[in-house]
Length: 299
Image (cartoon, rainbow, N blue to C red; front, side, top):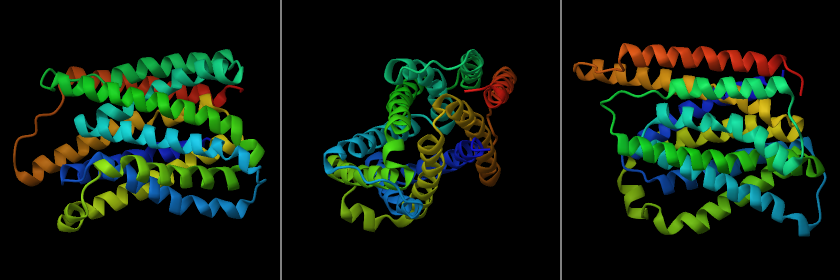
């Protein structure tokens, strides 16, 4: 049942990134969006304190600080990927986590996932490759930049996931996660402040305030679903396979928004070719198969 949390997160993250993409199109920078997202998480995560936990010595505060830094890096790379491409590119590419996680589990935690989980991860990778099929009309340079940034974000979040699984049990989720995201907000403010939008730009352009706030709140909520699951139950490989469904939602929502925007503006919609649609449908089926296999497999 706990895999329902990453499933919900896979939907919320797409809507969150879509709103943040809208904010960037209206003038917000990726730096400002990252800071806003981190502070939204820092405000929401203290609710978990009600669950309680075990406070560790002050000398161990470096652990939530590292988690916070990885979160900042992962979200910044993701937002830059969305800026140069779109959600239908960034979300599927970040699905490489499903293969990075089992490899990293061996290297970092010394844990060998089951054979069924490995098979599910490989199937999901083929599905992700199909989902991110593009038209010849796409600007290849921007796509490659977006893919690279999304991959870097995926690497950051892979380490983030595994370290939460490794470190959180000693603290418990109620203490470890609020501390981690408090550090994320502080680090984002200190490190990214020189590049964020000026106060004049923030106050002068209110068109992106609503999508920025909505996107940041949704990203914080999806982060709760993912990090709480990892901290409480572990099982990073299967959690990330389920979370990889965000690639499907990303493609579907992007198509829907483009269609509605074209209809509203009364202009012809130039959508993906039938070949691309068939490839992405194939990818959707493969990822669905991998999710079913991951859920039914033992740890």
